[in-house]
Amino acid sequence: MLRRLASRVYWACSRWTLSGSPAPAQPTVLIGAPHTSNWDFVLMLAIAWRLGIDVRWLGKKSLFAGWRGPIMRRLGGIPVDRADPARVVDEVVAEVRAGKVFGLVVTPDGTRGPHEYWKSGFARIAKATGMPVTLGFVDRTTMTTGLGPTFALGDDLGADMDRIRAFYADKAGLRPELRVEPRLREELALR
Image (cartoon, rainbow, N blue to C red; front, side, top):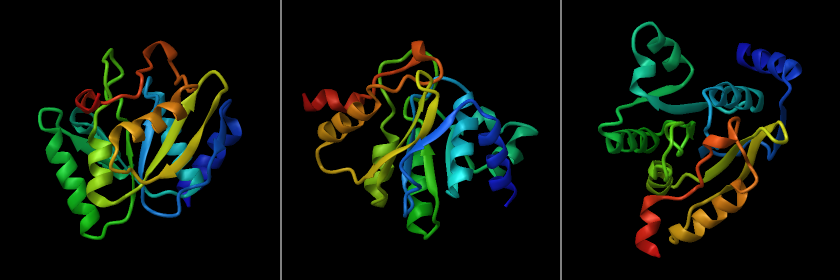
């Protein structure tokens, strides 16, 4: 209840407009992109709380150090050790298979620094759990944020990524100069 109230106050005072699709009807892997600023986190929580989505999210392990740890975990955070990201995928898959129900927010852009590829963990988690993918977005050019389509990933990774690229083609993020084109290193093997 406190979260819903906080989100209402946020949206009433914010310059941003919440738009797009309604909350998914089932647990989903929610892609947060373009991930170009730490403020994306605030927008993600505001969207989830406004739409009543119980979310967990992946964040770098250093965010959970010291006094921030309990706060980040209470907000749904799951620490990621970048030295062993496959372990996190396995842990999330195990939680879903054990019957825990939640939406998982993933920022496949990963870090906000310069890089060429998205991280593929979102696709591996979606395929291993059978969870669909929901495309969440931030677009500074229109000052809108929200949710796009929800769909199940198929057997053709290239086709799925083409669909994702088409959706994000006109989404700039908070800092457009840091936007990364949605593509996976694994796609190179398909071309």
